[in-house]
Image (cartoon, rainbow, N blue to C red; front, side):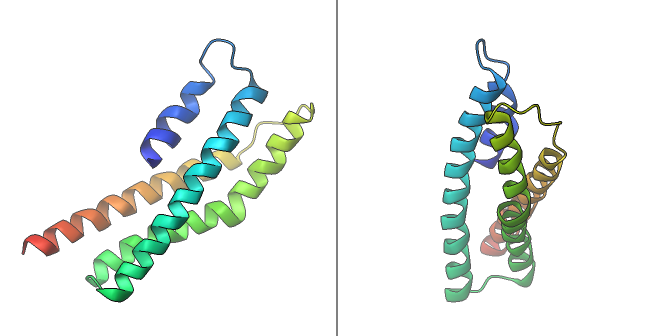
Length: 127
């Protein structure tokens, strides 16, 4: 989901005919709110699963990195992006945001951590 939305849908929507910056921001806000909600549910499920049946330390570390990245996105980066998009949607000519770079970096970290955690889980379950 993160790969499809963050690295495919988000940049492509602004290239679609007739999609203005305000329309793209409105769509993005809805999509990322939904994605983040689902990610929170998955993170809670992962936490519960690791308490019920603790995996190896490497798996726990990788998954906690992914969850930490999500929490930083939600608590630090997304509120800043929301303030900027609020200004743009209100008609202000807000400067380009560096917050998107932070968000993309955290998305990349999250994907890498989930891949590592998943691979370690597979290796552990096969052995």
